[in-house]
Image 1 (cartoon, rainbow, N blue to C red):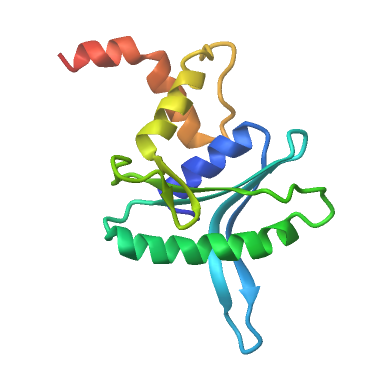
Image 2: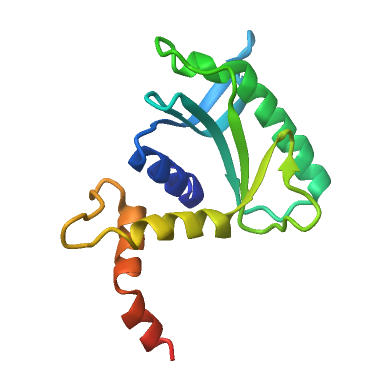
Length: 164
C-alpha cells in the first residue's frame, strides 16, 4: 500500500476521472532492478492531461531535493508514455513535487517540475468537497481519505465550535 500522501494524491486524481498508476518501477536495467520508481502518474483521457506527482514529507536540503527530483522527473519524461500504452497521451507532462514541509518564498520549481505545497492541495480539495452535500453526493467508499475530508467539510462548523 502507498504511503498516506501518495494515497491521498491518487484518490484525488482518480476521483476527478484520471486513470492512476502508483509506485511504478520504470527503466528496467539489464542486470536487474530499475532506474527509479514514480509515485503517482495520472492520465485524464477526455482532457488529455498527463501529470506526474512526487509527494514527500522529507525535510532534506534543497540541494538534496533538487538532485532526487531531477532524477525522478527525467525518468518520468522518458518512461511515462509507455505506462499508458494504447492511449493517445500528450507529449507534455505536468510534473509536481508536492511537499508538506517547504516554502515557496525563494522558489516555485524543483528538479524541472512545479513546486507545490500540501496546504495548496488541501485548500483545493476542501474547496471542492465542501460544495458536495454528504446526504446526496457522498464520496464513494473506495476513496476513504477523501470521504473523511468530506465529513470534515460537512461538519466544519461543529468541529470549529468544539475547538473554542
